[in-house]
Length: 489
Image 1 (cartoon, rainbow, N blue to C red):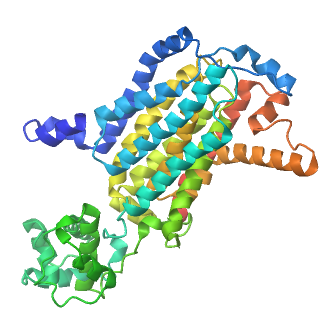
Image 2 (cartoon, one colour):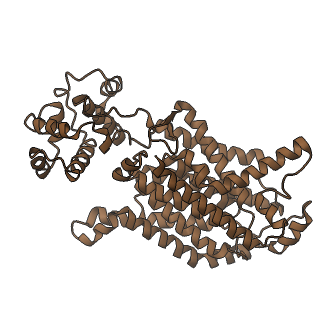
Image 3 (tube, rainbow, N blue to C red):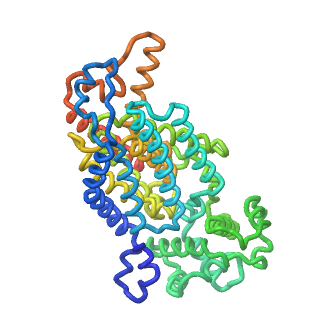
């Protein structure tokens, strides 16, 4: 809502320009989300108490653990509703609601929240810890993952390989000379791009400068020109080389192209104009997976990207769900991981930073940073009430939603393989369960006193607060390690 004030009224009121900056809106979204959670939290908790929506603590085979947790019985649960609602309100105020990445991330937040809500509702109705059957719960996660994968494969969210980075130009001095010559030939292939430049930039080009500021200005102007649907005219490119991808695109109805298609086509046209000076761009980047620590190592997946997305969504949502066993543990760890991906979203949305760090440039991820900031604020606000001794639990409504969003942010920033590092704590918790179950089935012996791992340390005598804070420290270390891998490239 506030974004549109900047969009439509900044010409009349210049102060509104500040609302156009995604960093300002991210800060506003985080503060709004936090304050809404603080203000609405007591009312939501009281509402849950009034309707007796409390946690059921069942007595299982581990009596010591039941003794530690039995006092939590009746504590309001399904607090994940507070996280989701306050995040949506914050986004409504501060975000650009037409941004596709924002819409995708928000849809996953809500849909996974619905799956978790159904699970919590059935638990409460039955007055038992068993909610949705494992098959039904998995089916819901599976459906969300399949929908997300299908959307991303059929509607590419990134055309980062199409925008021009500094390294894409093989020889800047020769390239500037070519641009200078093209200015006098407005109907030539390269001349079509130069015609979109500002008069000031054209003057700089004529002086044949070789400084970094001018190169950066040229690159920015070219990237803006790549979004121009009027760059291509048949007469200028009648003798264009036979690039298969470009030929297929030109055979289609260019007038119906989306922004990403226009950028891609124009990049191919730019490459054909000066093939010896512009490095060929990567094809089908949206279904390729980058490997952390390597500059240009990409794993092509094609249609297999759909099951890959599915595994990420199901795996991450279940891992966060398993971690949600102590007051504030999953909430704090999720906030740390989401904070890391919010920073990554900002990095990949900037052409200069993404080029320098050799990560995929995703311009529209700037709004994903606003989304992450809003969720960061609401998560911290929820933690205010979820910290030990917890006044409210997030339930599966919150844990599945946060887990699904965490996986989605990894996918939308094209940092899928960085997720196991960012969410290293969740991986450890999930692995502890897998190892425990596998060991008991194969050897009839348990590795841990109880899984997930946080319960093992509880039964060893660590206090709940000590386990939680130490696990937060581990989560923070993993998040910092993940950001450090960017420089390794």
